[in-house]
Length: 371
Ligand code: ADP
Ligand code: MG
Image 1 (cartoon, protein in one colour):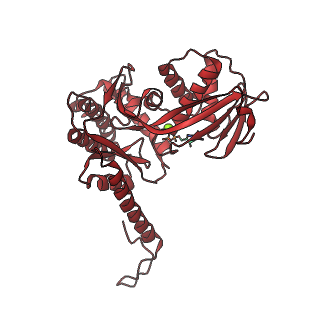
Image 2 (cartoon, helix red, strand yellow):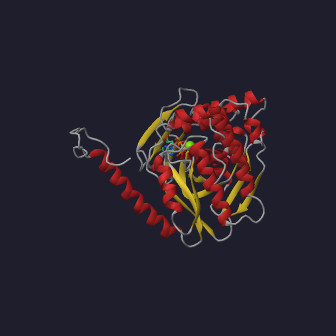
Image 3 (spheres, protein in one colour):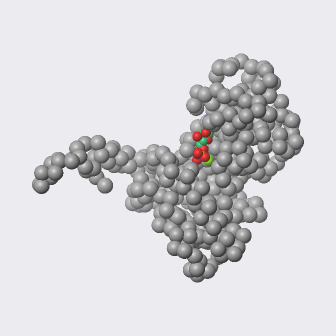
């Protein structure tokens, strides 16, 4: 099957689903806590049509990669596992899914913490809902998408990303209680806009460290005798924990409190921004999922007069930062900060690559010129 394959022309469907940026409530969803994402304008598009043979065919134009699988066969490797996972989940729920051809195209950046994986899953499930005429509501779509990522892609994710992709819009915050799935669509703080900048740092450690944090949270909850860290609201209750677990739990407890503070009546841009700054500090110092590039990018954003606050968004170890700024200023600030950040990165790169001048004591080993 090629990208220009014509059998998509007849009997097919076209659907899409957005990525998301999380404003507050990071690493809280797998602790049954609170989150506050917004959909981003970038979307993943899926075209689906009956397959010409007995196999599923998938093509991602982003990766220029084809994959094939059978619903009762082995899972494919790579990105197609997310797609096959969605088909398998429907099968697990008793839906007979006939073989399909699917084409995927996305403008959600992949692996930047803006949830291209959930956008892919939700878009695939929307396509399956449409083409098979399934009676699935948007919450079920999110639940199936999350189950596909956990069971078939092997990522122990919470439900925030899939709920955001399935239910959020780009103009409002989705305040979600991930335990009960109670939710409210809320307006952004008055006279504000969002800036999202990708640090360009690949999230190499994200997978393994994510699983480590997941396990640490479970262990902290077990030692505290609660089902989930969501059930703790008083940081003093954490003092009995060993120091590392205490820090991890303190992030979760204080982050939940920050989400609740941010959705209180009448919260303005500067107050919301301070909560974002505090969230970043907690992710950096207590949860230890930041990296220097994300700290630098947030500092550069905060140095701008129009910025209320900035933080890393997504799981960390690379990926993107989000900032809240005064309305009308996002484009200008984003351009200025991106330019400065790129210059800074180029200088650092040059510093690492160039040998340092010989030092006074005759030691001429190459050294980084910059920290
Ligand atoms: P994030 O969800 O933050 O973007 P993840 O690591 O969770 O990062 O998911 C990224 C993975 O999702 C990619 O490596 C790829 O396997 C899959 N993916 C997402 N969008 C696409 C796409 N358009 N085409 C192919 N694979 C995609
Ligand atoms: Mg993801």
